[in-house]
Length: 199
Ligand code: GDP
Image (cartoon, rainbow, N blue to C red; front, top):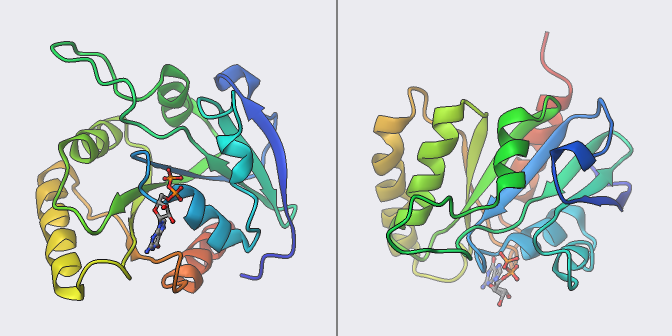
């Protein structure tokens, strides 16, 4: 898929403020610093696109971008900010939970995982929650250019093993680098195929 246009659409503080639309949505989420902004910029080829999401006051909002006038890319707030020891409190915000559980036009959520790290509890818990609410998701391993290839492969395999008991069907998985653009073609092709399902 070629990206012909990518424009900021709207920021929403909650599910009811999300754009009224029948366009399919593809959302991106991950721990803060996982490389989400870099990936969104790499995919859209707009260096400044995800900057909108980090402007003051917008980091806790759901940020919508219109791509090719045909689908929406949704930049969700990162999780892992509000860690509260000894509580059951969700480590991502209520608006995100409501969106992921209830958004009719959500086609797929891409969960970003840092390939440099062994499986992290917070990522595993998030995937467990997502599998529980039956939202379609895919894994996107980031920063493949950084750690040694063998280390990254080991971390990725360990993550897949860890979530296997949670997922009856293994989710699609992509390996990416915003530096080398690894995975860009594959991710965009995957989105493209979801837009025009094979008959
Ligand atoms: P966000 O907080 O998830 O939006 O993460 P950012 O996109 O801001 O990236 C966090 C840090 O990781 C920044 O210093 C980026 O330059 C770096 N980074 C992000 N993606 C990559 C990547 O693919 N390769 C390398 N080497 N660094 C990356």
